[in-house]
Image 1 (cartoon, helix red, strand yellow):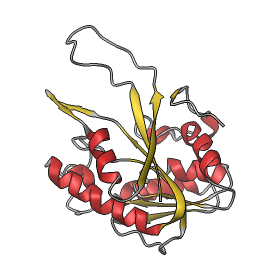
Image 2 (cartoon, rainbow, N blue to C red):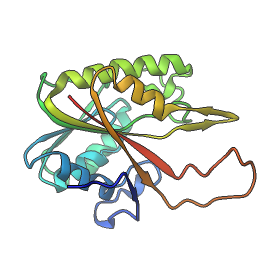
Image 3 (spheres, rainbow, N blue to C red):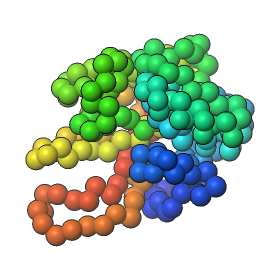
Length: 222
């Protein structure tokens, strides 16, 4: 079946939205088609950067088991409260580089990376909090460790979908998506990229700045 390289995203399904995390959680409707395409009912879907648990909600709706890691204890607790309505899902509080899963046990990996330079959890003291890393090389090194750990728990033939954008930090363009792809390729076989497009307003001004209304999905397999 032919697959388009890009998709225009609409609003999320209100039945599965998480109002408390508006603007911070991903779209359940964005993830469900990918889960159906890349896994089977009963499979284990792993999100190493689970956040509010959006991936696990989508996994439950589509009849998959979900396991997520979230380093922020308060965010993990909020996710657990949300996930009470969705059976078969588990959030573990910990470091994405140390997943408590058996090697070869994961059928599908889906995550949205914690973006470098984001003003979130910057004062965290836990070494597993990627948001708190202020040096880009340190961030990429941590990402390398996380991808190695993720690859270890994937079964042969399993797929991974990593959502990431390039970044504009102050006056600096940071090619995060492209660097993340390079790091990911050390541990998994890169397959292709897809692009999700969002309806975001534009403004006149600097021709070197855009509204950043697109997100890359890095597609890989073991």
